[in-house]
Image (tube, rainbow, N blue to C red; front, side):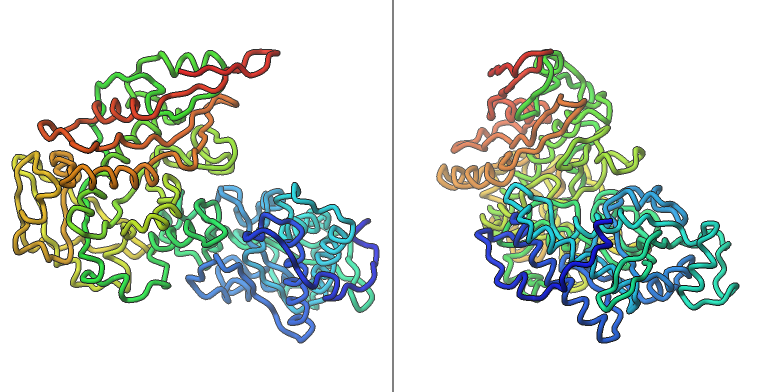
Length: 596
């Protein structure tokens, strides 16, 4: 009923002069909603002028032409040609997004991709959307603690109040055809697999008088994809179906200064085109360092017994849970996949390998090509279920190839000016193809051959050919200090790409040549690899662990007499950051604080 009242016609002056003390507008619900009103006003201008409007957020990458979908020419999409409004969703489970499924109506629709057809239904929806935002602004209900309220919030409120019915429903079909000006039989409602559209039960008022019903549906989530489906579940790669539009949602590491996490994900996917030629120039980058083989060897922890909570920075929850993680000795490889301690424990080894690679890059003056990263547990702002985001499929594969921002604060890497490139760098369209063959392999005497991992395709259905063999090799003794590697390379020190096996790297001595150089490197590593923004992984309800645990410092004078193994690396890391267990929950009592 609230949607049907006709308030005074809004004007631009109602929201003019947006002011906020926040550099990040999203943190100010009033300013963000004011911008939303201006956005809808902008849409209305185009629709009044007779245009259809396809709008997207700035963090949406267009990969394919969307016109076959909005015109109904794509397979199974014939009804979309007759919808007033098409909108993307935040669905993270494709099983809920089948052609006739109505589950999207109970999920968050995402106005990051929005198609508005030049119809009365669209005009009525835009007017209701803008009225809702203006009502909230003039009523003064938007305060600083209203974070999360914005133009998309109010769009969802409008859509859920429409009482949508599938147009194929009995009693709706012929009425809907008449409203569309379509003859009976002109559109086939019975075709299996066709995506449905929905009509509002009631009509909304038009700005010019009268009213109109609205026909709306969600765009298919496989083709108009959110970040979790594409970057975490890798559904498009598995189904060899490139997205039409890719919205970099469900990601981390953005700041008011820049969208660091979004850019890094697009770089990893080979979709970022904002880097100049100098970014790909080996000479300007000091050459590149590439790591070969898995960062965590599959059998590196076989038969190892450690305290279950050894890799957590913080443990919280019931007394039974905190006691278990503090005292229980386990084989980490035997932990079930829904136990986040499996993730944190294996990640200790991953971070140590990455630390060593960054040290070698610094010692040789090179830019590190970040190796592919692995996550044994998902990351989310809210509670996880079985180490997966609650909205994701229960069968989502663990572990998975994960984006950098799942594990690290990407903006800190930028602030520290650490020279790195994404793992897909050599295959990026802007990268010189000769780099792939201009590789020199560094080997450590007595080491095993490192297996070349297959590079996942950057685009679904577009496999990447294997790299050619390195053009030459250089061998150094086990225990060689990293500070001596440049000299050991001899004439090959100027090679555009130097590569080393991850297992070989563990047999070198991580020493940059002086106490000061080691101290400076440790300082940077604790900022990059430590828990600058601690991440919470819940196990059961309030039982949770926090990560991530950084590798131990290399120290001013590293001991080069032995190479460290997985057990030593876990032990060194656990000693560096003191465990603390902030509280244990007891029935009907306040939190109890415990420190160790």
